[in-house]
Image: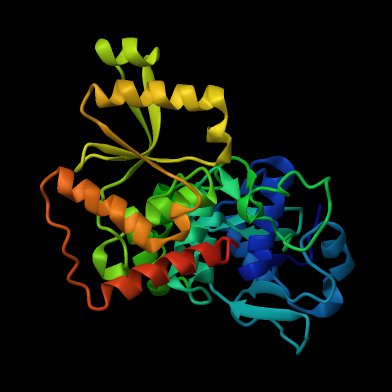
Amino acid sequence: MHVSHTIILRGQTALRATRWERRVHSTITWAHVDEDEQRLALTRATCLASRIDFEDFERNGLLEEDEILDVVVGRGAKRSPCSRVTVRQSSRLGSGGLMRLHSNIYVLSPAALVCDLAGELTFAEQLTLIEELTGSWSLPERNVAEEDDDGLDFIGKASGYYDCEPATSLEEIRKYHSDSKWVAGREAARQAISVATGSSRSPMEAIMYCMFALPHSLGGFNCGPLKPNYKIALIGKASMLSGLPYVVADAYLPRFKAILEYNGSYHDESTIRRRDEARALGLMSMNVDVYRLNDLQLKDAAALESVARTLYRRKQIQFSPRARAYALKCSELLRELRQAVGLGN
């Protein structure tokens, strides 16, 4: 079928599309395109309102009524003022930077989206976006805080997130960032990409990862490296005590031989609590310390710092942040991470 023009989604529109796709399909079903198709899509890309069916985008959940559509077009594309469209020009998007949504509608890949949005986001927002795209959770494409719709399966969860497959991996994001030296937002995304952990399973885990893995200079506790969803084999006495052949830790800190576990409210159920206690017994028999963090602690920078200080003390390491105004940086980091995933204060 001949395609006379294409529409390439970027920015907040591409992020909305990605979140919609993950909510509806639990995974990304779009096709990656090669660089030949990418060049052709950019050559034919339009931002002319007369060629954009806004109502179709709204029907398919990619746009709210009267919302701005963010698109990218090739260099020299014909442009005309339109209050509903914002435009960025680009000569190329890099290998793996574009995916096909429909026959003539394309969207930046999750890896490309990290760089594309970096200039519009704070450092904490960049970090949580990377955690969201590489994790098995996603925020909703619209604000659900004030909605009352029992049909939405993510209502009732902290920050309104829902479970799904990862949209990309940290390795793919880093490769795209390394290979695509000309893309917009590359420099702005550099720091967040370099310190991100990835592979979290909820917004609360993402916050926990960032707070403990980031260096003191950024407001974190400098407990890294942090290995997410780390499998630890239980052998001998450890297996007998726990009744398990292995455990998968939310976060393993090899420097401290310790595990961080986020305990949501469901961990209060008696059967799950007994299982957690058995796991902890097995791990402690292997001299692996277990630290369980709950929702209240993940609201309180001082409470989290107390856990970090315990980690350091047990390994006879001095916890002495040299970053200027460290306490303020730490509390601001936690506040901004929580806001970035819709948890507020």
